[in-house]
Length: 354
Image (cartoon, rainbow, N blue to C red; front, side, top):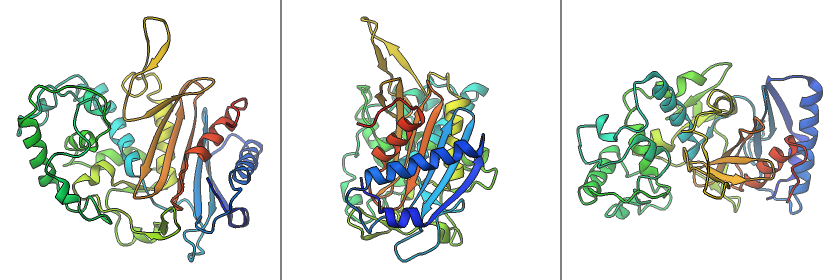
């Protein structure tokens, strides 16, 4: 991964949402700058800016580094909105778990109980959808012609067109073979539970200056940085159309940090969000939950969720065992995975870089 040190170290802005002391904040920033130098053997002019949040138990630190674009000299700050892409799922997950705890929804209930109008949903439960174990395909048969625009592959996928092809698919798959397959249709169906009240998804985190919206207003678009692909070419944010409530969240770092903090603390013991099983040999195996990719690190399991809007725009890493986490947002098009993992290992001290 590549970061241009000359821009990053000159244009560094820091915003603190919650701290447990100046010394810890300064130490983390020092280590982040070391990681940036380590990761930037081949400097690139395509990098513009980063937003970085570090969670260490009850402390939350935020750092903004770099600018809004190659020709935009405005610094990244707490008002910068990033397209969250798939990280939108976390907001849906947390609201679902709240509903489970209130008893208004039940994770093992059939989807048809809550969306009875269609009646084509077979034996799929809410838990199946959250865990991407419904058996739904990545692309529904017959929909390819609606994704012919390579620049905007989702723009023609209206809510009604998605429902039409989903119903057609369910009609011919009444007996579903449940198996893990990451499909955006899972979260599309979950989003239908909130489509008439989407504000419920973002409301719990709109505090302390946090901002989020599924369709940014014209005014808010001034707070969206210029996006670049991996070749350094300007990229237009995706129009998610019918998938807007599934992948179309725009949020600032404060909002995304609050969501990650909530995942680690309020729901740290919830088996729906974080689940580990033991096999017959006593070895730990993960349950695929909430769409996270789950990696076994030296100390414990790390839960990863990435967001893309044609480019890599954000990543959330969570380590429930040590109550640590990292959120990284950016607009350069480069993968943020290794950079975020290095920061997480740094927070946990004896985790070593690969």
